[in-house]
Amino acid sequence: MRIIHDLEIKNMLKMAADAFDRAYAPYSNYRVGACLKGSTGAYYLGGNIENSSYGATICAERVALSKAVYEGEKEFDALAIFTDDKSPTPCGICRQSLTEFCDPEMPIICGSKDGSYKVYSLGELFPSPFLLKSDKETIEHSEEVKEDTYE
Ligand SMILES: [Zn+2]
Image (cartoon, protein in one colour):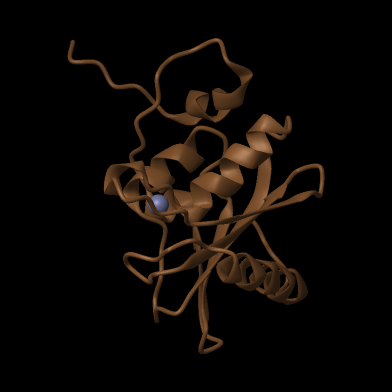
């Protein structure tokens, strides 16, 4: 996992906490805030946005990621999430979405309102991602995955 300094962890958790306040979660009351740091140094915030049709709900992490990619950012240094919960981690579909643009060494800071946090790497949380072969530069890191054959 790439090194991330304590000051940056606290900075990103503060921004994720601000994003938490802007989440829209009237059905579950489970709000999440996310702060994604691009390699340009820009921060992209997101909160979960629920929907009456539950399947249309989008997580905070994917709101932040979508905003960033739309703005042209395609490489990321770190992600922080923030909830009321004791030990939050991104859900499976968010782990998959992050894998498209983030390398396995990217730190993911998982913070709680009680002030506690844990730092994982993306690869630790999602060790065997699904990656299509593509010419897209955005999944260059997939080249690091060794391929086995059955011959
Ligand atoms: Zn999610």
